[in-house]
Amino acid sequence: GDSVTQMEGPVTLSEEAFLTINCTYTATGYPSLFWYVQYPGEGLQLLLKATKADDKGSNKGFEATYRKETTSFHLEKGSVQVSDSAVYFCALQNRPGGNEKLTFGTGTRLTIIP
Amino acid sequence: DAGVIQSPRHEVTEMGQEVTLRCKPISGHDYLFWYRQTMMRGLELLIYFNNNVPIDDSGMPEDRFSAKMPNASFSTLKIQPSEPRDSAVYFCASSLAGTGNSDTQYFGPGTRLTVL
Image 1 (cartoon, rainbow over the protein chains, first blue to last red):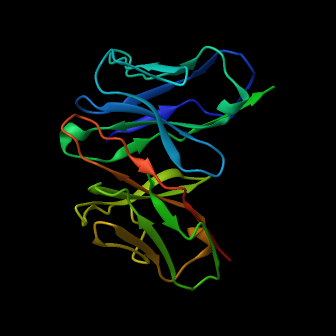
Image 2: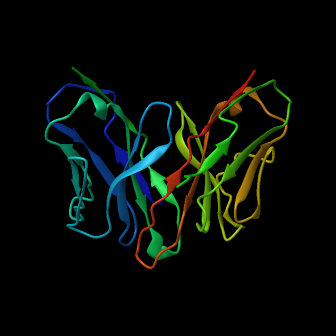
C-alpha cells in the first residue's frame, strides 16, 4: 500500500538557519504530494502541494519539489523564523485511483531558537 | 468564513462512559474525514464519508467506535464504552472534490479526549 516516510524529529535550529525536512514516498501511479503544518493547539493546515512530477509547491518561504525519480518531496526554507516552530507532516493522495484518503508521515517537530 | 467546527474542544470522561464528538464541515464540502492523533501512532484516518455515505471505515479500531453523518452539515463520532487507550486528539476534516487530481483537506481544531 501507499506510505510516506519522513525525517525523524525533533529538529532544533537557530533563527535564520536553512531548513530541510526529508520526505520519501511509496505509491502506485502518480500521487499528489502535500506538506501540512500543525501549530501548537491547532489542527493541520495545508502548507503547500504538488500534483505532478517536477512541480514545485511554495508558500510562506517554504518550497518542495516533486521528484518522481527519487520518490521524494523534501521541504526546504532558506531562513527560518521562530514562528515556524510547529509539527510538519508530509502526505500523499492517490486520487486518480478513486481514493480521497491522505496518507500521512509521522510528522517532524521543528523548534526554532531565537 | 467559518472553517470546520468541532465540539467539544476538550472532553474528560471515565472509562466505560459513552463519548460523542461532533463535527460541522465547511459548507458545500462533500467529503468528511475523521482522524485520530496520538504520540504513539501519529495521525490515523478512522473513516471518511462522501455525500454523507461512509466510503472507507477500515481505520475504525473496533466495534466500540461508530460514526454517522445524518446530513451534509453534521457528523458524529461515538465511542461506547470508552477506554483509557482511546485518549487522543480527534480531528475532523472536510474537502470538496474537484476535477483535478488532488483535493485539499481542511482540518478542524480537534477534540482532545481524555479517558480516565
